[in-house]
Figure 1 (cartoon, rainbow, N blue to C red):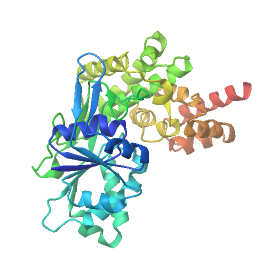
Figure 2 (figure 1 turned 90 degrees about the vertical axis):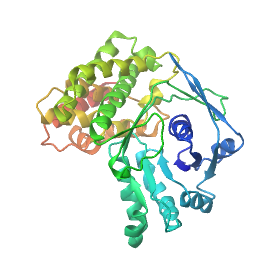
Figure 3 (figure 1 turned 30 degrees about the vertical axis):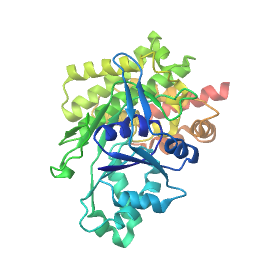
Length: 385
């Protein structure tokens, strides 16, 4: 069996690639970074270190890498004979991956089993998005080529911090992981992925993950940055930061109960587990890394505005989530392009315009006024500084 995985970075090697390897797949990493591709091809094995309580080391073998930028033909051949294609590149990059998958689908033989495609991204319906991009790239041949594949949405969860210098292609991760995959598209022919679990309805799993793990992680970063803390684990040692993050997650849990009927007690346990993961001192993770790309994180269907809008629409409280957005507006990192753009827009746009532009909320939406007021307060602070 063979799997082609787009994105040979830390998530690709330390999570998706590891589980595919443990499922017996030969793993072909596809990436555009010359040095990374060369480094992967220069070794016969790499180690995934689990840092923290219960962590063990996993040795990965049976892999290679293809430079999709310089050797598109090789990538086409790999996809043409693969069983599985996965991605961990970021939702905005999927449109650049799609043409390569189209070429691979076109090169598959008529008797090949359907290619099983799963986008492992921090986004709701990421595989649906990838399928749409593949359909666009295929043009008139879309119907024929899409029939050669099955597409399943997934929810993935594993913290992979910035890696220590000199580690080569080894990866340090947390021991905890979750990979939920919708089972329906496979028609009973499920891919072999140890540790993954297949579910009929993915929506509760992916929203529970995004609105707890991603919301909590980003909130910790932004409140921590405001408090002048460097590490995520240290941020939650600050009682004020911990209280603010907890309050935000209590609001997202209330939304999940209302939307999916999830059990409040089980969600409380899940929240506690998530916060314990963030407190793991063995994971050297920084508020700057977790807080990067703030414009994406305050957009309409992301970790703050998404659940806050759902709460407001149901008459549920969203004050703590709006407070997290306010903290995100203060995130100022000259090395992060989105942070620079965020601060520029705060100075250039009115509060009304900025809110609509960055959050996608209509002025009539019940959440709009609260976010606009948070924006106005940040703008006033900038004028006074």
